[in-house]
Length: 191
Image (cartoon, rainbow, N blue to C red; front, top):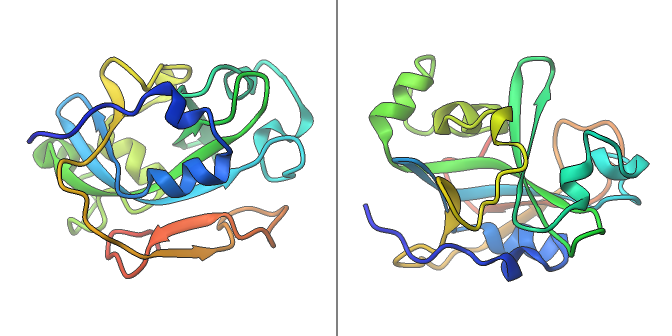
């Protein structure tokens, strides 16, 4: 399957909310597996109490404060890894959680990694499912997603879509912020 060009660093060196919205419809590629990004959440940094970077620069958050266009991968609930893409210029914190994908390539590989998934829609319809299906782990933390084996690409044929905006899910703080973006009506969005 062919995809368009890899998103350049300048794509990520913008306000986090713009990056989160603009990632919708793009294609996440890791090796031979690929999926269309259908759901994202923006995490805004120091003023966002739900963001890991809210308390400032630490060993864990160093990637978020670094150059844009890098992967921030962390463990949640002691069992699921989540993939974020760093936005904002270097020194400013902001990242975008990839919440769900529409699988496009490497389906046999994804199914082997997610044997519990009972349908195509269930392969990557949540942040932990997404990383499992795509073979993304904490070893990818800090990876430059503007080159190499883990990248985001333009789709060859961009389809028009409407964006649904809601509050983020699965957090306890800053719950009132409408920073979750999804392709309206898409069956691959998390539930």
